[in-house]
Length: 267
Length: 103
Length: 184
Image (cartoon, rainbow over all chains, first blue to last red; front, side, top):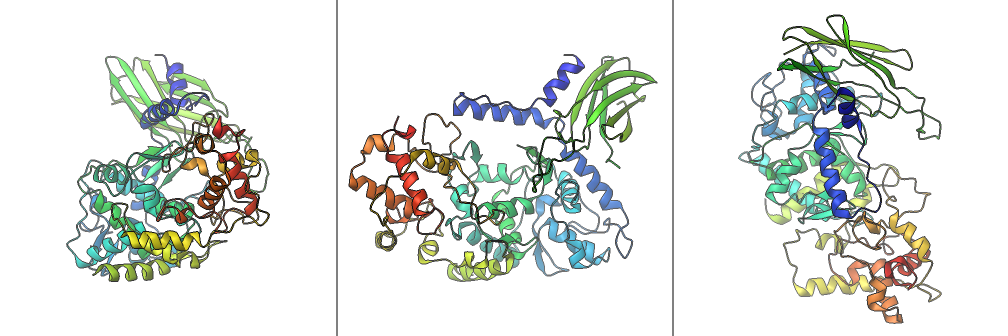
C-alpha cells in the first residue's frame, strides 16, 4: 500500500450508507472502531498530562510528582487500577480526579475553587484533569482492576453507589439501570453494556477514559457519569462529589479482574 | 502555539514505518456555533516529512480531514538512529515541526 | 449498613452531589412512590400485590383527551418518535420535547437505527386493529406506561408532562393509523 492509500484509509470516515440492515451497520461500526485504534489521539492528552504532572505550578511552585495516588508518593504505575480507594491522610474515599484535586491543593497550593475550574475540556478551553487522567490511567494499561472493599468506608461507598445505580428519578423515571442492567440491549445502534454483569462491566469500565471521535475530546470517567446523568434528565452532577465517587466505586469494583485498557477510542 | 506532534518511526527490512498524531482543530469553516455564526475555517494545508534533508512525503490537506489527524506512511532508506522531521502548515499560517529518531 | 440505611444514605449523598441547572432542579431527586418501589435490579421480583398497586395507582393517573379523539397525525408522530431531546439541563425548555421512541423500539421498516430496550412496535396497529378499546389502551400506555406494566423502563410521557396531549395523539396515530409506516 502506498502512503497516499494508507492516508486515505486512516482518514476515511465511516460512511454508513442508508439501506443496509442494522446488523451490518453494527459490524461496520465495530470495524470503524478497530481502524481507529491505531493512532488514538488520546496520546496527545497523555503527553500533555505527563508534562502537567512534572511541571512546577501553583502558588507553591511545585509539581505533582510527590502526589500519592495510593501506592506511595510519585508512584503512578498501576495506581489507577486500584482506585477509587480509601486515603488515610484525607480519611475518605477518593477517585482519581478527587485525589488530583487534593494534591493540587496540598502540594501546589491551589485553592479548591481554582483547582476545579475546568473539569472538562471544550474546544480551546482545555481541561488539565482530562490530560492528567489520560496520562495517569495510561500508566495502568495492562493492570488487572483490583479495587478493594476491605476498608469499611469503601464498603459504604460501594453500597451508596449501588443504590444510586438503581435510583429512578426525574421526569423520565430513568436510572443508570434503565439502560445498563440487561444484556444484549442497544440504544439506537449503540450497544449498551450491562454494568451489573461481570464481563460487560469489565469491558465498559476498563475502556474509560476515552477519546470521543464525535467530540474530538478525551473524556474522563467523571465526564462519563456527568453526561449520563444529563441524559437521564437529572440535575448536574458535581465534579468529584461524594455521589460521583460512590458510583465510580460501584462500577470499578464490578469490573474487578478485568484488564485495564484505556485511554481507549470511541465513536 | 499548537501542542507537539507524536511521531513514531520504526525501521524494518529497509522500510521505515512512520506514524504521526497531530493536535489540530481542523475546522471546516462550515460549522455554526451556538449563536448561529460560522466558525472560521482553520485546517492544516501542507504536510511534509523530511529525512536527511530529503523530502520523503509531501501532502496537501483540506478541511475534510478529521480533528487531531493521524497520518501513517512508509519510506525506504532510513536507518535506525537517524531522524525524521514532520512539518505542518495551516491556512492561518501557523506552523509546527517536530522530530523523532528512527527505532 | 442495612438496605434501608443504604437507601437513606444514598439519598442524602445524592442531594449533596447535584447542582440545579437550567430546568433540572433538585426536586428531580424527590421520588414518587412508583419511582421508589421500582428502584430495584431487574432480577428482583416485587410481590404481586405491590405490582398490582403500582399499576392501579398509575392507571388512575391517566388523563384521556378532553375531546375524546385519540388519533392525531402520524406524520407528526414520526417526528416526535425520532426526536431525542427535551427536559435535559442542556435543552431549551421553550422547544418541544421529543418522545425518542426509536431509542428503544423498532417502529418502521425504513428506520434501521432503533434500540432494543423495548419490544418491537412494528405492525403494532396491524396486529391489534384500532378499536376504541385498543385506542384507549395505547393512549394509556403512552400517557403512563406504569399503568399496564409495573416498573416498566418506559417514561410516563403524559403523566410527567414530557409530551403534550396533542403530541400523544400524534404518537398514538403513528402506532394505530392504518396508513402509518408502522403498519405497512
